Image (cartoon, rainbow, N blue to C red; front, top):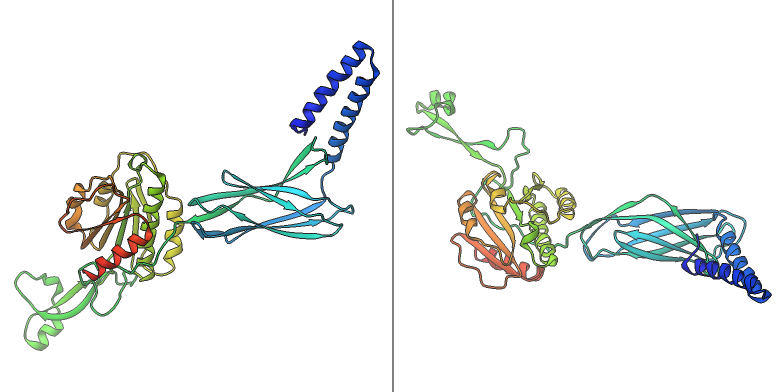
Length: 377
């Protein structure tokens, strides 16, 4: 197709030829013919399809926000002619990345590496790759697509956070898990019967042997769940970067619990995001889900979301600095520990009984506040 310069020369040549013919001057007509010939030659230059094999891959396919990710382009000239330098463009979301491919002899192969943008969290579609063939005068160019689009997944940034003590002993002899076939209610010991005990728990063999009515003592041996709630209403944040920091903080808390082999639940006011049962293999699954979290419209609040989940364990709430925290006290009794992280607040927060407040402007602030809260536990 003609470039703007090619279209301009073609139009000017037609007008010049018409003027020369009308006025009877051969010179303008000759210039017009030369211009049209140049345009025709440019079109013919770009018509042949390059005999190329193009392979593009992304390395790695998943990165944290801000970490490097590269496109690796391998181009092979399968034709007989020497192929002059080509210009390729790769789409990475809304960004266009230009890639210059060196001169290729017949059978020659070139590998070109170029950086992909990772400054925004989320799913970034990469491709298709477009090779641009242009004539030397820049009058015509032809764009051909190669390869299939791929997805670069940009995770939130995280920092290392230890598990926050929930303040209640949920297991008796080291870590346990509710993945056990028997479920979460486990036999612990035998004790004497006291008034009000469920008779279904009486251990009759031991009672007959000791002459005293004995009952089984059962405990809930499940690991406490860390529930992470992110305020994700669109009108809650004045600056989108505040929401990105909230997601980074939520990811850091969730990943810390996963690496400690504890179950994690992540949700927003619009619904659940991720839920795991405990284990290091859960880290990638949680980060994959958090990479796709976006601001959304909706009447649901984080308190409404918390009311729908099972009680117990730790609750960590991520909110903008201007959020009203008074309603969080309404769900305080349902959890062993409640932590509220305010992102870039513009005023001190009121004291909330039983709630640990953390004000952060970046992830370093979160790490420092988290360590102080653990030491104070």
